[in-house]
Image (cartoon, rainbow, N blue to C red; front, side, top):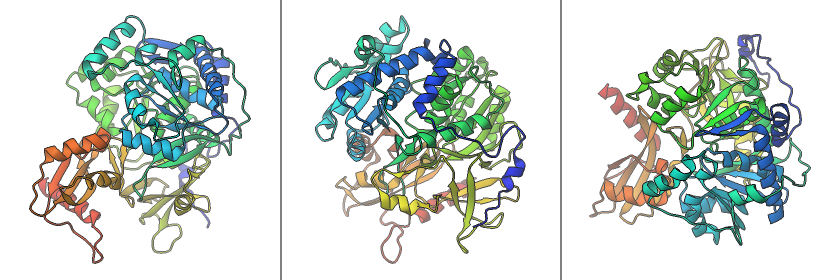
Length: 562
């Protein structure tokens, strides 16, 4: 079909509509940047800094050690860490060894870890000491052969490295002692005692997978998105081109977005390594700590999510801090309220624009211009080398401007497919196009707008939550007859998880007991925040629960309340 691309007329002269991509592996970008900026700070972690030469050297040490343990080309290695130097070292170390990174959320419960490890077939995992007991409990149920354990304090400056364990024990009330031996390995010992020597592995950037990024879909069960070296590198080069006013080797990027989330991986880690920027890493989001960090460390780039910007703007001590170093921010993961955009720009003097993407596209496909024209409520225009189209639900071809339909995209950043799931891959990828499942429209000038989702996925605080996964757990509670989970509007998180519950006849259930049960089996961000008990749920003639009808009820309630 002939594609109309009105968005190309909107591009400023500084952004080429088509970029060329060198066939390079992701680790090659680190090697080149370390060669160009060996003494440049790559990472600033709570005061501890690592140069690019040190980062490369330690990644090589880990690569050699992993190969010594038996890691072969294509073997999967899970990384279950918060944002910290070890996470970056591990990522590039696994790739240098020839492995495939399996991005694993540290908030996962044992059940979720077990599922992901088994689905990916990961034989290696790099994780925190505090998470070691969780991994140990599921190890025998998976293909895991080796567990590498690190501690946050391993990369903290003096005296924080001495104080942190004391604070950690008080907060978590857990003391974990891990010794080096057998199938358990200490990260600190590996880095201290290993040589920066490894066997180079021939890698095809176009075909070989770099990352399995787990996401969900209409089935509700997480799937491993296969992202090749080229997919991720292309999206990173696009990001660099979009941020054309940024200076190579000079910017500082605030690394709040978790690297186990594809947006943080690309917009913080890969962008920084490709362009020689300094990553200012924080292991978790705390509004007060973030304000202090911006005030002290002066980041210039701040990729984030609406909930992060909202929390900062609403902090009681906001006015005490100087945020003027922040020059540019691209917000992703959820719709950005116009009010928040305007307030944040006023506080910082920088630019904050909304973008759009999904794990299957490494992740960014659209964004508003940082220093050019932008439209309120729009996700912007497609990035270079990226095509997008609204598919008319009536004609099955490109919709007219203003006509709603499904958003489909194609480009070099689009995934190879879902790991081990060819049928599900075929369901969303057709003739090179990725069907996003999002409903939207394009205006006359090529700006896109997303208005709804075909999928039932909930986006709460930037996290993707799949209702069926939560329902599966709640259905295990023996007092429940029926349950349906939906995302309902929330002024802070964008959406929040609500469970509509029909108790078994003659049985009473409290919110408290359901909350306790859910927290035992689900990561905290997936646990319903609201429960509503009903005698019945709306259904179709064949008995399918009408989730959309419940969401519409919530929207009507909100409308009437206002």
